[in-house]
Image (cartoon, rainbow, N blue to C red; front, side):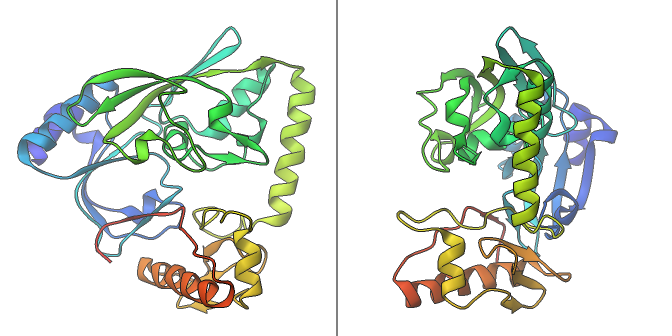
Length: 299
């Protein structure tokens, strides 16, 4: 398998037994058998074809900002789309971006071009491809508000272009979360705006974020989806869990909606704390908490 992958992506773009702690914002996770960084759609298709041929599991990731990879790691091939697949171009009132482009970078490019509508995404620590999976959003904005179309690849390596409606965006949800589809290219539709006003709004949101979120610790952002009629952080605090620790994992005392890696946490610490929060909150308020975080590997 190593030789097959090297033939496609080259030795410089293949890592063997690569610790996933280096590729997730939680900074935890054991080794993946293989981690590849393909250069372009053709290589992505070739890598996934080899995986299917060899019956080896594979997974596409971006910045690892919404993943909790187990301490045992991942038995298969991680296909990372990040610095290797991050082209961005301005197209009139729209933006084209490859899946590995960081949301913060796309938002800055939009601001410089005088394109408004993406200010909410400037501080989200993920890639635009990952944002398609979960319809990323913040401060009243969501990706569904600005997506024009998405080029997706299915489980057989075939490409198709989906409209915003076909993406079936919902709250932290999309068709990608339910079918074997992967976002590779994204087209956004924005509006003309004043670059200085756009920058001012982005700075305002950045200050709000830094004042209320534990950005100084590794985390996956908001750990739980917002329960209908409630706020996750408030429910967790009301259950008496502010600052609660389990091993190296902790409920942030700055924002209870964040589980953070406070002190060399293991993935098991974080998973157990998430489960404890779910159990305690349901006992206290009767509300079931659903994680935003995706669990990868054996726990």
